[in-house]
Structure formats: C-alpha cells, structure tokens
Length: 80
Image (cartoon, rainbow, N blue to C red; front, top):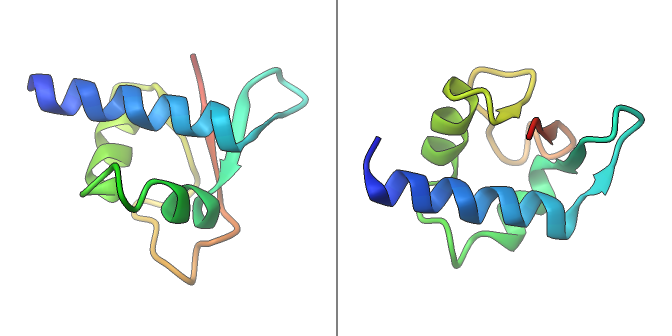
C-alpha cells in the first residue's frame, strides 16, 4: 500500500466519523451521498479509496462499486 493510499484512507475514516452517526453496533456510518459531497475537495478518487479500505476491512458497504446518484443512500460503515 502506498503512503498516498494510507493517507487517503485516514481522510476517509475521519470523514465517516465527522459526517456520520454511530449505529446500533457502535460503528460510525454515513450515507455515500453525504460522503461523496463532503469529500469532493479532499479525496480525488473516492471510489478507489473506498475499495482499498474495503479490501483492508476498514470499511464495509453493500455494493462492489458505489455510484452517484444511484447509491446515495447506501451506508458506508467504519469497522475500526
């Protein structure tokens, strides 16, 4: 994993905590639409960062690839 990817995953994790809420399991969660809107200026490749974080089991979401506006209500869950 490159330093850049690690840094972007940290930005992603912070955004989920900052803009989301805590679910019944105690994990931070945020709708993809909100995450997309709030990270537009900070994460150039949100989907790439999400996929890398999902492979590392840092986040979970239902779809293989999230797309706007179709998946705006899909929740991204922070697992750590």
